[in-house]
Image 1 (tube, rainbow, N blue to C red):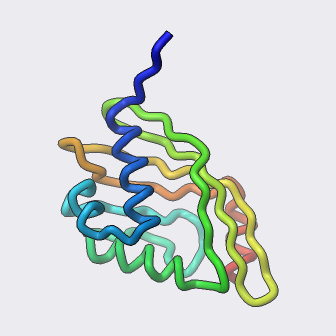
Image 2 (spheres, helix red, strand yellow):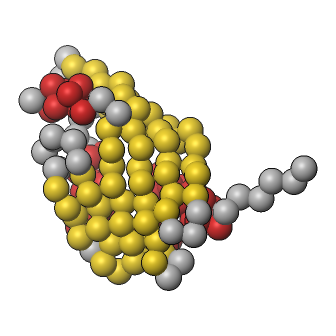
Length: 131
């Protein structure tokens, strides 16, 4: 049996690679101009980041937030309207370490990523880490 990934799963993976390589041009091509990134955990970036520049600034600040910040992508599931990316976040700040699962839920419009919700699988651990 042959398995073909949904085009939106590939779009998420391309976006993931573009973030990893700071490829702003590719991100702007994959994201809707008015993309909304919803940060749901209680941390310094909680809320909505709207538009290319605001989302890029958020991602840059997140990457610069501590001694290290790494996110590992485990899998992506997608259909015509939504995709879920299951990942693991590992970060260190001062003497604190955070290891937590996360789901990035994406919504598409016109073959572009329109919205992303960052959903921590342990929001209390995230809150304690950033307190």
